[in-house]
Image (tube, rainbow, N blue to C red; front, side, top):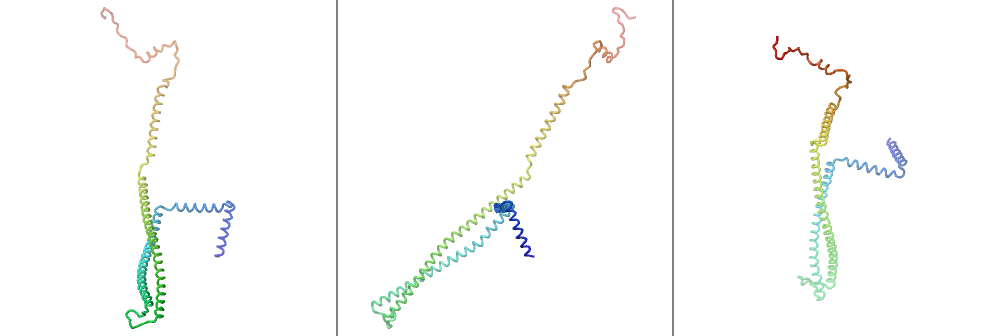
Length: 275
């Protein structure tokens, strides 16, 4: 079953690759790469900014354990150097003591007095003194090599400590800088979000202006309609023109129609009396 699924997957991949090659030719890998990067960018752009801020803060916080661990390493290195310094001081003191003893033995070979200090009754032969001097000198040289190695180690460790301390200080400073920048970004984001929230409660000035223009157009249309009606009443004909017969006495007809009939008035005789 699993083998069949693997075969189908391989076959599907081969068919897909073949299709891409047939469509795009030798440029197929470039198209695939471009599509992959585009999908990756689109997916990254869909991530909310607060999530990226939290992710960056987690990454910065993850530096803290490493910083503490490196501080501990630095402290151990400094303590090791201090102990090496003490060892070097002790070795130098022992070498000075051994040097004094060898010079004393060398002087005894000159004088022929082979007795040890504080042991006047004990005497050694010249060969015994030479053998002891040779042993001491070989040991002195071995200790000298050890001293040189320790001093070289101290110098190397001191150089490492100085470089490591600089790196640690730089790392801590960069961590602080990143934290400060991240705080600034978060504060800026909150400011932008607050501005966007306040904009949601603002009136639409464009809609209000459009409404004003509409009302003004309506008023203008009403004025035009009123002016048109006035002009139509002014210039319209009052009636249908009628042709009047010249022989017709229109005045008499109007008087007869609209003037009320008057009663006959009594005759008045001038200069006489009525009967």
